[in-house]
Amino acid sequence: MTPRTIDAPQARQDYLRDHVGELYAELTDGFRESVRVEDLVYRAAERVPGLLPARETIAEERRLRLADKRGIEIDQGLFVSHVMADRRAGRHLIHAMMRPKREAEERLEAFRATGVAWALDVPAHWNALSYSWFSIYRFCGHGVTGPLFDEM
Image 1: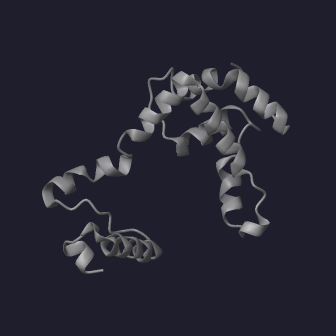
Image 2: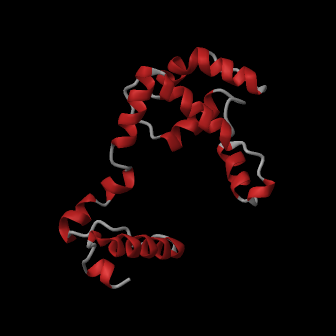
């Protein structure tokens, strides 16, 4: 498949309907490479300009307030929905997403040594969110306890 530029929304939909399996195979080296969705969308953007927004475009969009966004992430969602609708590509993507993330594999030895699986270098707002979620979880009678939860 030769890369081409795709601009109009209907042309993108038509292209995906007709070529998503072939494109996915190219992006995953013939289904031999497991590529997580967050990387897959940018590979597709590079391979077929205009099909999906580039990484830089998404980065610019993320800086905007919701009211000012153009909704370009929708194209990524449409791409993923077409991948999932393709039986072989969809199954392969699900398998790729079920595999451990690179960060988890990098922390495996530390987990084996310490028994601690939590990444404590998360943004501060995640700590508050986690605390709220675990507080609700504990309140509902699920009995989440332990040193990490008791310190929160």
